Image 1 (tube, rainbow, N blue to C red):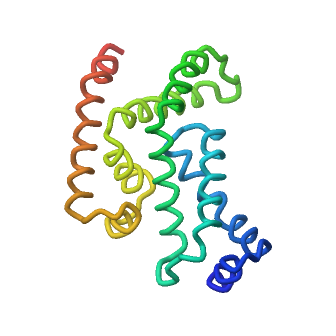
Image 2: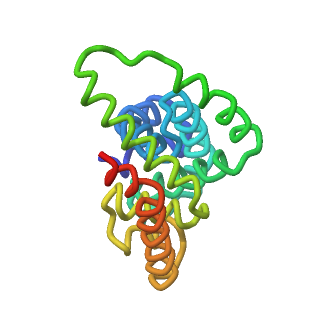
Length: 186
């Protein structure tokens, strides 16, 4: 059924394309959010991803799973966004305001712990190279296999394993250096 939708959409059928968007929108949004940690930014990225999908459907390789191709588009769009100077400047100016907001009182302690952990992971991920970040998120956060990451990032297994090793090593070192003293102090 999906192949028929792709075929119809690639010929300009907007209804078929709308069905593809509806089917994959949550997947695209959640994947983008893992990179940018902000739902508004993830929605912007998703819009760009579906625009690229629409424009490139006629050249789609029917032998590739659509989700694999979408992963590839999402990751590339996220990396482009993260590399952009305007994105980094906007995030730097809004991050201070974000920490000044008062958290909701519903499950405040759990929300605070969840947010603190997400902030730590986000801060650490930003220190990784773009390739390390992409490999780490796809492999360790998304739980994809090495083969799936290879297809999405167009990298060989050795490069993926090397980037993942270095990403994990850096994360471990940063956690140990910056957060272990705080844990021991409590």
